[in-house]
Structures are given as C-alpha cells and as structure tokens.
Amino acid sequence: MRIVMDDREPESVERILKSNGIIVERKRIEVADYLIGADVCVERKTLEDFLRSIYDGRLFDQVEEMMRCCSRILVLVEGSHRLDGRGRLHYLGALAYLSLKGVSVIHVNGYEDTAYLLTYLARKVEGDKPSIIPVRRRRKAKSFEEAYSILLSFPSIGPKSAEKLMSEFKNLREIFNADFPKLKSLIGEAKARKFREVLNSPFVYERETKLEDQG
Image (cartoon, rainbow, N blue to C red; front, top):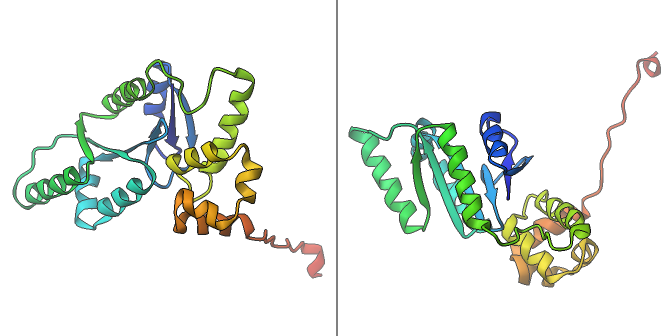
C-alpha cells in the first residue's frame, strides 16, 4: 500500500504511516496534501485553518482544483468542532456546499488520528488488489512507478490524468511525442496546453560571474 504525501506535511504523520506498513512517497503536491490510489485526494487542515480558508475563499478554490484531478475528495479537520455565532454559521454553510459537491469532511482529534485514518483509507482503496503501481511483473514495477512519478511532476498532471495517459500510451516517449489533439481528448485542453508548454520550454541558465572576472 502506498500514499503520496506532500513534503510540507508533518513527519509525525509519516512515521505512523510507515509503522503501519504504508509505503510513503514524499514530494511537492500542489493540489492536495495526500494522494491515495489513482483517484483519492485528501486535504488536511486544523480547525483554525479550515475556518480561515472559508472566510478568504481559499477552501473552495482548493476543492475545485482537487475535483479536476480526483473524483473522490476528503477534507480532514483536526481539532474540536464546537463553534458558536458567526463561525458556526459559516462552518455549516461550508459543509452544505461541500456535501453538494460530493466532498467528505471528516473530523479527527489530531495528527495520530489523521495517520490512522489515512492508513485505513489506503487499505480500503487498494485492499488485496494491485495498487496503481503493478506488482505482478516485479521487474517492470520500478519503471512503471518512475514513469508515474515523472508525469505527476508536471504542474497540470494529477493522478487521474497520469492514469489516463499511461493507459493510452506504451511509454513516456509516446506521451511526450503525442500531438495536442490527442492529449486534449484525454486530459482536456487546459491541461494538455500546459503539459505541452512545459515540454517545449527552453532551459535558461544564468551565468555565474566570478570575482576575478570583475577585476
């Protein structure tokens, strides 16, 4: 079982996940805090941050972005959820909005509960079935995982888009050489355009100026 974890998330969660037998891959994730399987996004927030993100609208932007990448979205809120006054009304309004979007909001006490809930989610998502990284042909598992990680490193490619591309093409070379109409039909125009933009962007190096050159 494997979870992709944003590299800004606490190490305490990672330690518990590993002690539970989870393979943890730390990397920068812009769309969520955790990715489980091919289609589950998990965002972790403290109660204070959850409320702030409601007030400034950040929560709703994050949810929309996660929905572009995954079909199953969970928001974990750490801390007590007893609220009064305006905070309670905003909180209930946000819950109503998220529920209509199909987003699950789950309250936990702290990082330990977060880690155990993520563990159970990984077990439920993958179960006894192969994960998004095939394990039947062990000699090919590493190359498959590496290709999957490379695709996820593109800013426009999430787990769902990566899975579509890898199902359609045989290798990374075919994906990189695919024409725009083909990419557009698989992952949408905006993602395909950004993907091609990154592929075709030239490298720009800044020349270091040595002190002796200035004399």
